[in-house]
Length: 297
Image (cartoon, rainbow, N blue to C red; front, top):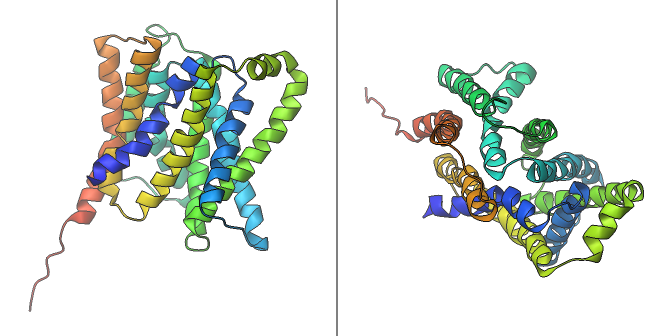
């Protein structure tokens, strides 16, 4: 049951790419990010009102700028320039970047299983993203690398908060502040690309509205809310298995909504990347769950 619950937010996040391409084609990424973040943050604020203390605004603004404003904008660049399955599977390489980040920053060397799986994941990604077998937009690929970096850095900042702030306050206000940053950037961008914004906002269809509701309410307010709530109540193993739903959702929704199709070899490479990203976490988590046997003298 726990694993099924963990799959719900992961599934919603994995649908972002296909849903965006299917319902919100040609919308500006900055505008999409603002419409995803700010309504979700305000909805969470209405459900449980909170207000940061004076010394908390700075870190929440930093977190909102990295975790929400920058990350959401990059996610929508990916959604509009890369196939859904490629985006979903590509994001499973986060553990490799996190491993390198902590190695360089904290001198925390990866263990053998982490190093081997990381190397295998990079090799599989190199084969999957080979220009001779699949043509991908370089802007989308750069956005993917930048989005992964945002996750690694943002997670490090969030972890450093520890018990200083309640998780609901952190979640709510990083969405609100990150959304406000995106509103300002969207306003500036709209001056430079007026036609794009006018076209998007002047002809909102039912399809557009359903897409916006999906990414703002289900994908963000519900998805992030469930994730942080479940984080307090579930084991690492449950979350690790639950995370499988993210790339699978990207593959399945890309097939259903966009008609994306790949060769058996390409699907095999995707499966290999997913397995290599999960294996080190599973090994560590399972070791932690082993009972400690004591010897009575």
